[in-house]
Structures are given as C-alpha cells and as structure tokens.
Image (cartoon, rainbow, N blue to C red):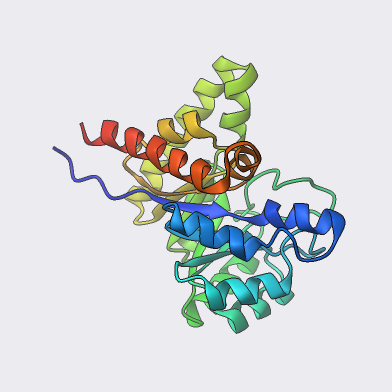
Length: 252
C-alpha cells in the first residue's frame, strides 16, 4: 500500500466577513466562524486581506493570529503594503495571489513567469520572516517551474476552471483535470509541496483528494454558502468526510 500523506483542510472565512460588512457592525464574526471550523475538523484557517478591505479587515487578521490555535494562512497580493502587514503579523503561511480591484473573486493564477523578480523578492522577504510561502498558480508547467525557480516551497493549484467546467462542459473538465494531475506530479517532482483550491464543493473535493501529491485543500465560498442551510460545523464535517473518502481511494 502506498504511503499517502494526510490531506489537510484549510477553511477560508472571507465571506463571513462579506456578510458582516454588507450591513456593518460586528456580526457575523469571522473569528467565531474560524473557531467553529476548527472545532469541526479544519486544520487551518485562510483569510484574504484585499487592498480594498471588501471582506477581511486588518483587525480580523490580528485577532485570527492571536485567538486561533490552528495555522493562519494569509492570502495576499504581491504589494509592499501586504508584505509589510504579513511580516508584522507573522502568520504561519502567506499565499501570494493575483488581485484586481474590479474582480468579484480571484479570477486566475499568479503570473510568476511574467513578474519573476517581483515575486522572488516577496518570497525572500517572507521566508526571512519565518513565514511559509505558497504561490496560487494555474497548473501550467511554466508557472510551476517558475515557482520553483523563485524559491517558493509551496504552490496552490487554482482549481476554478476545472470546477466551473464540471457544471456545464465535461470535455473541458476532463482537459482541466489532466492539467491538474500533470501539474501536481510536476510540482512534486521539483520538490514543491502541492495544495489546491478555488470553487471546490463536496464532490470535486472528494475527487481531487484522490491525488496523492496534493496535501492541502483550501475551501471557502462553498462552505460558507452551505453553512446558511446546515450550519458551519456540519458543512465542515461533511467536507472532511468527503476528503477522507477521496484519500482512501488514493491509498487503495
């Protein structure tokens, strides 16, 4: 039987803050959501501090770092401002992502090839501060190789195109799945730790959990949406069970 690593679940609590900010005030509290997610089986908490502070705010990041016992994964754009905040806060991990003010959600992977020197400098600064760095990229060989070149120890494969195609275009979904499988294998062969996320639901998380190269999934929007119907703890527990089923297939 192959030695398959444990598959971690990072729960992104951004959209609890989205609901809070729609009306103002302090409710619902994303830190409370993080505690519930951890109690239900999350291995870490992910939060994206955007330039426009549309959901997570600076005080949320500070409270998450101070009050949550599980690792904090700080999603951030590659800007001087965000790097300064990360170095000051010292989260367990920082995931560098592309960011456009007009986008509703992260639309694609970080272009490491096109901004190699910028990303390399950010990786160096964050690593010097004792922060594990990951790059949120498409499963493209050139981007994966560039991630290795700039010294990032981790990549997170953008699964959004695959998840979207699963709904309405099965041939495209198959092509995207092949890219993910090959990308994960390439990254592992280069010595990179491989994570994945964006658009995952119970079924797609179970499917991707069967890839032994991937050791962490980061999931947010779907879980927060499900929580409106069944509660956050139940949604996280069900997700954890789906991931465990997929992982069991990898070990079979």
